[in-house]
Amino acid sequence: MAEGGSPCPYIRHVRLFSRGSPGFTLIEILVAMVILTICLVAIMELFSGGLKGGRVSREYLQAIFHAREKMEEILIAPELSAGSMEGRFPDNSLWNVEITPFVEDEAVMPIGSVRLFRIALEVTWREGHRQRNITISTLTMARAREL
Image (cartoon, rainbow, N blue to C red; front, side, top):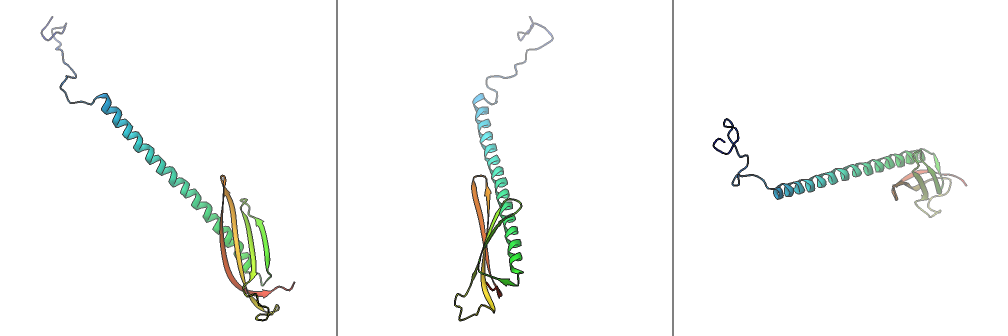
């Protein structure tokens, strides 16, 4: 046997890790992996929260477009009468509109003249198990429709 304890005289025995060498223990590696995992989970939660916020924002934006579309449809009418209407948009969101005279006193504005109306429009839709809604309202001048 050659010196250094190697069976072959031409190969020297080299020790890869000595007891005093600087290296990581198994516990240190496990702690580092746990910290890395916690950080990755937190980043994934932030990412999924951003995606959910984007989806909710898109749904609210779609509801606002629906509400504005229906409000414009009502506002172009030359005559209005007090009452309510409801319906459904193609994406299954619902709309409900309430038209009320803004001034209730008939002595101030006769029926045949132009009157001030308050129009309140609500759009409702379902998001999973929750029901969400938005309401827009405006005032408009129009001839009162004879009943």
